[in-house]
Amino acid sequence: MQQEKSNIRLNERLAASRELLKELFRKLYAGHQYEEQEFEQLVNIIKRAFDQRPEVLKKRDLEKQSGEINPWFLLHSLCGMSLYVDRFCGTLEKVNDHLDYLQSLGVNLVHLMPLFQSPEGESDGGYAVSDFRKIDSRFGTLDDLLRLQKNLQDRDMYLMLDIVLNHTSHHHEWARRARAGEKKYQEFYYFFKDRSIPDEFEKGMPEVFPESSPGNFTWIPESEQWVMTVFHHYQWDLNFSNPAVLCAMLENIFFYANMGVDVLRIDAPAFIWKKPGTTCQNLPEAHLILQIIKQAVQIAAPGMALLGEAIVAPSELMNYFGTDKMKGKECDLAYNATQMALQWDALATADTRVMLAAQHELSKKPRGTSWITYTRCHDDIGLGYEDEMIRFAGYDAYAHRTFLKNFYTGHYPGSPARGTLFGVNEKTGDARISGTLASLCGLEQALLENDDSVIENAICRMILMQAMSFFIGGIPMIFYGDEAGYLNDYTFITDPGKQYDNRWMHRPLINWSKNELTRVDGTIENKIFTSTKKLLDIRKNLNAFADTGNLYWLNTDNNHVAGFIRTDEMNPVCCLFNFKDKQNAIPWQCLNSKGKLPEKFFEHWNKETVIPERESEMMNLESYQFKILTAV
Ligand code: GLC
Image (cartoon, rainbow, N blue to C red; front, side):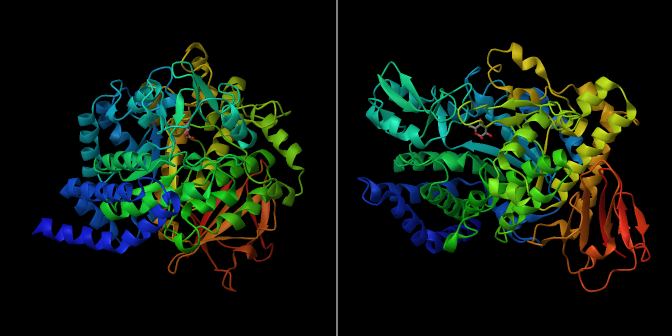
């Protein structure tokens, strides 16, 4: 009976989507030798995935669709944490012992950084996968992962994993067979006999890791050919113009879906289609692939949300939610990398204008989709927003970026930040920034100075940054260690597998006795942890923080202070953030959205009632203060 019902559901969904799937597939592969065959193969993969989907997950799919807030991932009760299992606690099994810790903070979505087999020393933090189905023995086994997933589910927590779509490790079976000369597998990658086509490609392609892996191709002596390697030389780019690659990767996606993954992070989707004469990023075909994946997942595993990790310019970023008739039918979630970088911009300049200039673009996000909002992650901070936005705020784009790089590496006079440049490209002058939230906000330097007020200031900056990213809309994603104030760790320099990549300085090795201090009153760890928790509690208690497309920016009449309203029929919330280390005043009137200023507000951070002072008509915000106000 149950089985019958669910088959009806599959057939209905398949019937509703088959034409669209076919159309998308045809746009990509029309004229391909095996077009028809591969399409049938794709449909069979979807059917098989549904057949194999455990009943408990099918039930969960339905539950996720029937909540008050739909889709489920718009909920304001969600908060994630990204962590490296080995650096957090050792093994998958041990993660179970730390779920209470995560829940006590308010985290209910766990992003386990790549877990699948990846050669040590050539792993790019697990993003060079040599087997998509086998857990790396460093972390445990597949059964350990399934047990953890079950435990999360029993606790009403969610699981997020990566699918590394763009490339495999050069030790993956496909790569090994390609290297050995098997034509079928050479067609899984981009192989070239000489430099003529690679040279054509190179003209348009930027370099992702110019210091450690310059160029986009690697010479393979065994087969005497060049292979495309956009990231590191040991990460071979998959060739999605071959439909067999799409089918094979879709099978891997469903393998993860059927393990109970709730959010699938699609790594580096901007890169999955290549064409000479272009940058080989953000191409229309890359979007078609994502749309096919979305349709397929929607049919067989509709409870799994897709997160596109496209760290690209704001105007490109929006396209990952789908455009035109596919609007809202591509990625469900995307990293709000623009907002993240612009908060760092505002913190350095104490000026919110560049951040505001980007909001016009960001506000185009379709309803029903959402962001991952964050201040730090395992990657560097790129300053990839458009020059136009910087100029709009009255700055020279080149000078402004130079200032930011100097500021966050502590070279600008008076800067409290301690970061390091990453991905310096001597040819273009580009560079990104590595460092932990705490070190970039000045805690590392403050501890050296051993001055309580400087330490306090650094903590205020950290919490201001977190607050804005928690309240702006989307699922907050905390990077592990930031809740306890971890500083940069420079020991990666001594590890040959890591020393070429300074992103390891902000991927901490957790010391649980330090994390225990989060429970000891008066410690720095406790201050940061309890403040982070308090922010999440506020978020959970106010429905306006569900991401229902309800964000409206306020004109605060003060460049140091950013403000927005999250509207809600019952209880709209005004959020104000002072990015300057001085007191600042803004007119109360800027909160007047309906023609009449409420007589009283409740401020949720300090838990106090505030009454607008009509005489002065100005509201004060202290240095780095934020206010979360609802009318009472
Ligand atoms: C993504 C990951 C990054 C990795 C790259 C290549 O951007 O976040 O860590 O180096 O993809 O897989």
